[in-house]
Image (cartoon, rainbow, N blue to C red; front, side, top):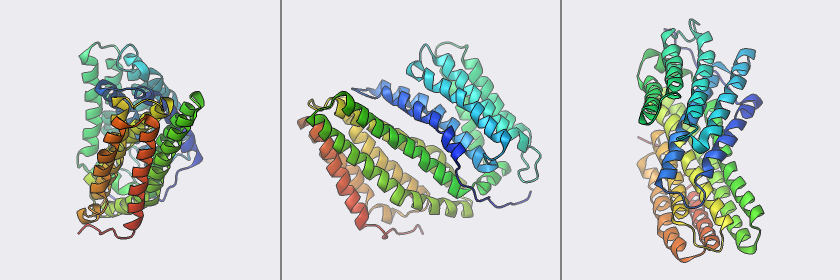
Length: 381
């Protein structure tokens, strides 16, 4: 088997257009987390969001490897968008009356991924056997389609089987998997994940602004200001420190053949990061909509859990991509402990607008600490 090098690739306008459907998907799924969400609401969000995220991952990896500049690939990406739209439209009742619609949308996307991979079979650069896109794309598509006609727990068991099959094929250390990880364009992949994070931060801004528009008052404006500071500082932290570090770490992991590290840092951990930001966005939107009352317990958990989850997952990604534990100890413990220690009592004692301003102060303190530790990272040994 040949050992080609990855191509330099950057995201183009067509991929940004394609991502528009995920703006809607995130917004629809986040709606169920507003107010006073419970564990069931969070579980529903995660169960419905992961297949959508995984669809995005598959399409993004395909474009990373094959490009989006050919007429066929662009046609396939456009054709995939209605399937993703079906998943988003079904999301409000995605585990209930509209589960069959969600399943058909997921099947649709898998067929689109197959359409991107099948023309690559037999090409000297890839040397992928025909069975791989069939097993990876068409078999899960068939399982999703069959699940649309199933009832009760059997339907969701089929969903789990379809996702597990795809995850397993990406995890096995076959020669094809090794080749795929060697050929990934680091710049493009990090850029695409970063742009997806922008979408989710955009959902946070949208929730804050629409909440303020519907409940325009002094307390609501104070809550909106605090929420904006939280979102802005987390976004700056992500793009100022996390993204460049991830790009260097991913390139190092690729050179070392550390496929598990690459897989976790790009496929799985960003899902948790996006989920944390989405939960936080819903909590901030609730604070702006109901600024004079104490935050409901579900939104309070979302505020604390979203901030803590953001830092925890960021730290996990950094560790998987080569940052040493010594370096992580400079900032990670405080990032996990300070929000919980300050915001839990603030949420119990203060109205939502004051609790949100307190969250802004906490994130500002952590931001200042990250500035102080900038340039002091210690690489892994």
